[in-house]
Image (cartoon, rainbow, N blue to C red; front, top):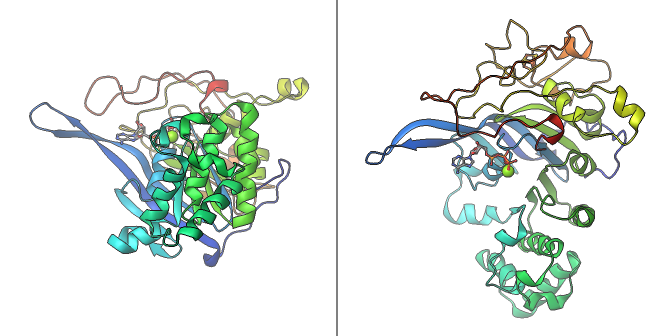
Length: 387
Ligand SMILES: Nc1ncnc2c1ncn2[C@@H]1O[C@H](COP(=O)(O)OP(=O)(O)OP(=O)(O)O)[C@@H](O)[C@H]1O
Ligand code: SF4
Ligand SMILES: [Mg+2]
């Protein structure tokens, strides 16, 4: 996890033993059903649609992108909570889909999830002790009473709560404390990987830093690996070693955190970065402003070619509408070879050879006729884009 915000060193390419999670060609499609009598499948929501990424041991991989682009579904699929339609998730050398029964149950304790809303993810009828014991029991980790008691107190101490909290119920805690309980619950089974889905976005700003610091301290102490989905680009930059930017089910850019913020290459990433306010008014006035127009297209009917072409200010007449660009390393000054981008024209855009143009908003059609009703609402001004 990066603790600096400026010029973080660019991580080198991983060798195979560094990699804890390897995701290849991952797709998660949800069927869209219609009909009262016969349950017909009339289409699919392509929530995750061809993602390749690797997460290294001990790092924090940040995932950002607009609401509905598939971040949570990707996180769940990595944890085997959402079955993939296609592709593979290999965890520490083992293809998760190949595991069944006891083998899968054993492996499951190695990856855990921390949710956005601690109140809805904690059963209000259970004490903190019962909540923590639930997972430990499921994995056979409460065999010795004295050791379990010591472990529960240790977990409370690890997340900065007093041992007396064990006998209380979730509603007796503040939001930040509840998130600490959610983290303790994830830790209770001794995982290697934690997927934290918007872990601080439901918390007051004043509490967010405490929870982020707690996650960082736990990572240093326990050697944890994190996949963090986060809303706030400043939070993502602060905590991530590497960042993946998602758009409509796919990764469009991936890089070390510092380099992504210093040299964003994909037009979508540039638009996101330009929406983050800068405190210095002089810098704010002079920097690039890219306003995204139009809806986020429906993941049930994604645009052909580059999925961003309907909103891209640099869209070209060739390739953009017809060929889906793959993540690739580009030859751009200052850009390292661990920085990958899925844009046919990334080099020309970075060199300033192509100029941005006005984009007309388009009505998105659903695959079975009328206007789409399944995607995100009308796109707000760039500053409000949900990341
Ligand atoms: N169980 C499901 N059944 C059908 N569609 C689903 C299901 N879960 C998610 N989706 C759809 O898949 C797409 C991706 O959803 P997902 O929750 O992964 O996005 P997200 O990036 O996490 O969004 P947010 O930032 O709002 O949390 C959305 O269009 C969503 O409506
Ligand atoms: S491939 Fe074309 S449409 Fe897609 S981001 Fe690059 S320039 Fe824009
Ligand atoms: Mg989500």
